[in-house]
Amino acid sequence: MPAEAFGHLVPQLSPYRNWLSERGFSFEFSYKGEAMANVGGGISKGMSYAHELTFNTRWDLGRLLGLDGWILHAVMMERAGRQISYDHVGEHRILLSEVYSLSGHAAAHLADIYLEKSFFNNRVNINIGRITLTHTYATSVLLCTFMVQCSAPPAIKADEGWSVYPKATWGGTLRIKPTRDLTLRTGVYKVGPLTENPSGWAWGSETSTGVMLPIELTWEPFIGKDNLPGHYKLGFGHDTSPYADRLGTIPAMFAHDVFHDANKPRDTFYIEADQMVYRKGGQHQMAGGYILAGYVHNTPSVSTFSDQVYVGASLLGIIPRRPFDRFGVMYSYYQMSPAITLGQRLRQLAGMSMGAFVNGPQTHSAILEAYYGIPIHPGLVVQPEFEYMMRPGETSIIPNATLIGLKVLGNL
Image 1: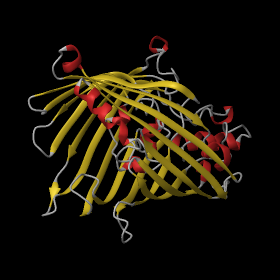
Image 2: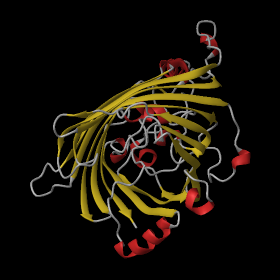
Image 3: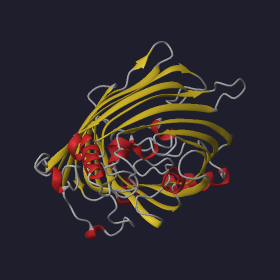
């Protein structure tokens, strides 16, 4: 998922970039910083900051080693900072700023490193290696213009199975493109705890609980005389790992009335759609305004969120004489697993702890997010942010939180 800052801050490096590219090596070095402040509601007022430095490389093994058609991709990053959700909002299920590691600070985290090769005039493509699933499935550049939804909807990335950036896992994807507008992706990936191997380098220390079997069908039509692109995705993932139900510990007084389900695998079904509704500023895929929506459903008894619905827009050039500014707004709704809610309610009735950071039976929450991206220089975008979190902690105990902040994207 590239940073949405088109161009480069140091164009003087272009001759050297071109020289390296001609010999088989190309790279991008980017900065992403996010400062978010809770100004009302939540558990306290205050600000948290996090940043990410990413070194994205591409090695043409045909030019370098004579292996025609093979490309090696590798991504390394540094992440540091704090998460506004935990510090000031009281939300521990959904991250309200994107740039925050799953397992704390990472000085030189290895994310994706995989081989790619295309066949039959790019109608068939394979990726093999350590890959982040949410950079391949259930994602888009449009989703990653938002903080909360990048790199995939939270209902997908909340649990093991869908390895979320920057957590990569061993596996591979086969992409088949029978026509210009249709693409089918499927693959096999190892599944393990999301917080394992925080450096990304300790491959031998990772445990395996099963495999993820994703499949996604994408229809990408071009509509009307302006060739307005759309992206319509239908996806499914089957995680073979045995998961216990989310009831948790049941008080003895209810033990005869409530039964735990046997360990079972987890399935995820999703629909994602976006459609450009007007074109402005060029002929590329981001040159225009989009509307977008999606729905996610997980196996309720073994998932954090059973359902998520989102709807939004990403609009280019809505202010006169600012043709390349982008405004985005999105509303998303999250439904907790009914098993989690039931288990917490029974423990509350028995006077037991409902769990860490839980102040009542958790049912649902919702988030309204808006941003305005301003490209102030080639390779640099400044993006004011607004978020309104309804029912922090998925209960009505903590007041709704109002957040404002600033996101900065830069490409060397």
